[in-house]
Amino acid sequence: MRARRIRITDTTLRDGHQSLWATRMRTQDMVPILESMDQVGFHSLECWGGATFDACLCYLDEDPWERLRVIKKHVSRTPLQMLLRGQNLVGYRHYGDDVVRRFVFKAAENGIDVFRVFDALNDTRNFEAAAAAIKESGKHFQAAVVYTISPVHSLDHYLDVAHRLVDMGADSICIKDMAALLSPFYA
Image (cartoon, rainbow, N blue to C red; front, side, top):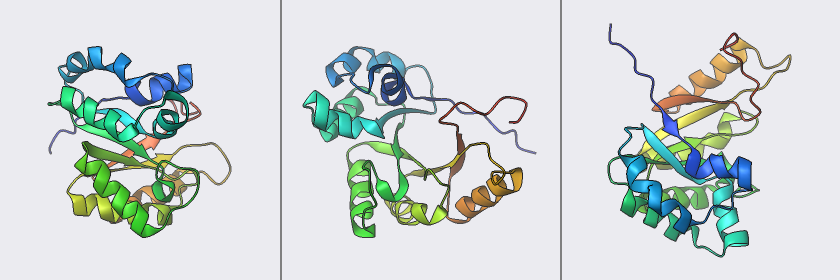
């Protein structure tokens, strides 16, 4: 039996400042630490997607695509990862399949290696277009199962969602616990 490895993804460059500083860390403030982070041996660095795209445009007067290219220039060993809201991409509404496909290809072209895809309601239909584009681009499709507590969200529910995502071609599965509800006992 082959031993399974636990892989660590650092989310400081995306989620760390999203939670603490409303996603207001500037690219120039990231650059000094990037090469050191690249030497750690992380599975990936999650540095893009989610609210970072919106914050660059609306609050920081930065080009989010240029941010990605700058990070890629300083990180050569560690795969770069993004958080993709399924059919919503990095926005706040659904986009057409053609837009999803084009966005994924452009993100891959500009440096994203691992796409962590989620849908807030675990509706796997909202993964389909992104998953197909990620697989076509030859990148890693990490499917995130969103965790919450309710009568509907049983172990069987989570297993069903995970199996559907594996059938869709997921290279890895991530449990996304945005509200910090999952304790080690239940894990």
